[in-house]
Structure formats: C-alpha cells, structure tokens
Image (cartoon, rainbow, N blue to C red; front, top):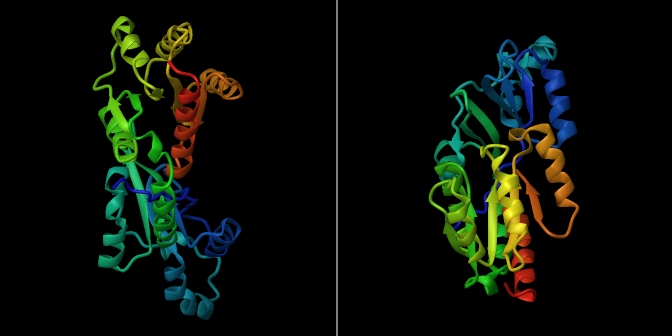
Length: 274
C-alpha cells in the first residue's frame, strides 16, 4: 500500500546557536527536535538535537550554568537519514535504533544531501489515522484514466508510489519534446497530472496552451515546487491557481490533501464528459 507517512517541515538552527536559543526555537515551533547546520557552511547538515538530548545533558548544563553554550557541542552528530523513497522504513528504523526522529533527505543538484523534512513518532501515528481516511477517498474513481508527466525518473517513481494504489495511473515514461505525439495521449485521459519541476521554462506554457485550446480535454492538475521555479513562473502559477480552468497545487505534497484535489478533478471530469 502507498505510504501515508508525511514528513514534517524541518526546523533548523546554525551549530553556533546557544542551547537557550535552540530551546526557544523548539518551544515556539512546537517541535521535539531541530536539525543543526554548520554555521560556516549554512547548507551543510551537521546533526540533530532532540528532547532526549536535552534530558541527557540538562544536569551538566545546570551544574555549570552553560545555557549559552553552542548547540553544536551537545547535538547528536551521527544521524540516521532516509530518502523519500525509503520513508516506509521509518517505523522499522525507529524501533531498531530506539529513536524518535529521522531526517528525510534527497540529492541536491550540486550532489549535496538536502533535507526535505523530518519524520517523527507523531508523524507515524498521524499516518496511521490518515491511512483510514485515504482508504475512503477517491475509491469510486479507480477506473478513471489518469496520466502523469514528470521530468525525471525519481519524480515519476515518487508519484507512482503515491498514487498507483488509488488510481488507474499511467506514467508517461520519458519527457516527450514532440507535442504532436504528447498532446493526443494526454487528451485520451480523464485527468492529466503535470509536474512542472525541471522542465524548461518555455515548455510547459506551450503545452498548456495547446491543451486549453482543445474543447474536449481532461481535467488538468499542475504540481510544482516554488523553490525550483523562476520568480516569474511562480507568479504565473499563482495567478492560474485563482482561476477555475486549471487546478494548481504547490509542493510539498500532503498525501491526503493531494488525493482530495485529485478527487475534485475527477468529479469535475465526470460532470463534463470529454
């Protein structure tokens, strides 16, 4: 079954942040952990600090009155991480290593490891509840044909894992430059999910215009990461999200909300036969 474990946003502090200020950040954000970055290299992941670390060190801190000591001196440096495609292993890893927080990472464009979020024990419990809700949604649309276009194999595989248990999903295997071939394939579906990320900025406006020029077309759901798009593109996408013709959904993707958006799209496709 598709995982419903959704990482929480990563709260980070530089490694030279004081213990006092780190605890303030945790309190203000209502989290039980923060990720620590090397202050000399802001994007370099250095470690994690959790409530368990605080319990371990609080006696020593109070004894020496060292609340202004840098958090980097007491953080956990050897951190177990998982990728988005490995996220189903989180419960097993937490039990095996007796930990409550696991950073979720992916490979950045420069080859570095980038933090996508953190899975906590609380996220796992929420996922169990979400599973039951997901089972009740969009089941009636299992036979509707959904096509997905994404640029990289990693993005296609992520979407396949998210949706294949819930939809009749057809993943377009490779980005196709020939719109003459691509457009008819899309028009044959009931829903077209278009992951814009990493496509050339001139590709997706042309494709969308060709689809919108067609009288009979599938519902179109656009997903994108605002941090991977040019500022002008984000502005255009936000304007499109205010209209009624296209469905536009920024990342990160919350599975339950994502499925609800898809349910809305497919409901509209039923009302308006293509």
